[in-house]
Length: 331
Image (tube, rainbow, N blue to C red; front, top):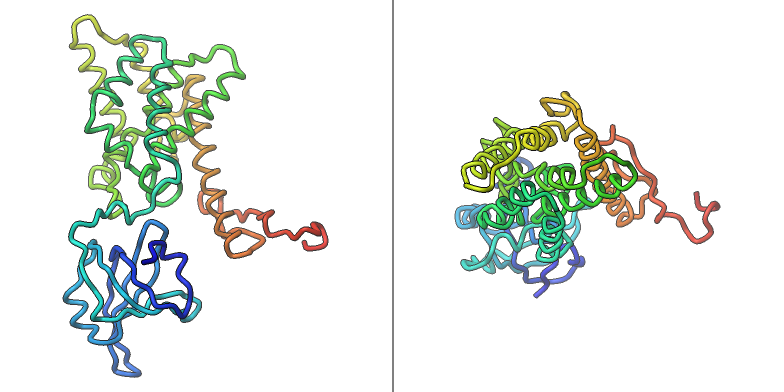
């Protein structure tokens, strides 16, 4: 059985386990025929499935959001690869884990979590260490959600483990920048970087990948602010712990300002050196992820230029992998 649907070749008979994302029963005015078109997914990507025979009955049987084992023949029609499915082959996989059929980070989630834990251990300030430990290590329900959450719906790291991956990228970029400038509070910067997107745990559903009602109405900045403020208030109620007011203000300011501009969704702009570094670290990772994702697509297609990159003013980037060994002569 082939698992990776993006590796399927034309004119081959296949048996695959796939997640049904969307189905659409279509009728042809020209032929009077009926066909069922299905968007099928595994962790590698999406392929179109087509049922021609007994399409209406199949439409009544299969459900969106469920896993099925299907057999069929792969072909290409109008430059789109698809599987023409045998109507009698469709079997539901009752015990299948939906998450394993969704796109994942290419990084090891357990290793990333270990890296995050080590960053927390490196914080010397007892109050910030207590806050981060309270968030990521003591709150097991939050930790499990954070490990799986996407970082976005469209623009960057929009897959399982994406939020953890993005957070670590932002942390590491911020720490590199901090080494170049005196006067930056490393512990504060690290705490803000680790906490800046915690609201995304509540902003996004993993499947289907979309904003929750909370996420649409409030957004991850407001949600994250409330989550961090609540944890700090709880720490203050624990004898012997407490939390300094000025430290609270500086951390909350970093969360509120990390988008950098009012028109980009931040209710305030960065007004501390740590908040400014965090903003630019966040921008660098989100933009570079978009660039490399588009370059990967261009390389796969053999194109010299990427498609337009929406969050970079629709700029198209040059793909150096498209050059031949003779270099300039191939441009």
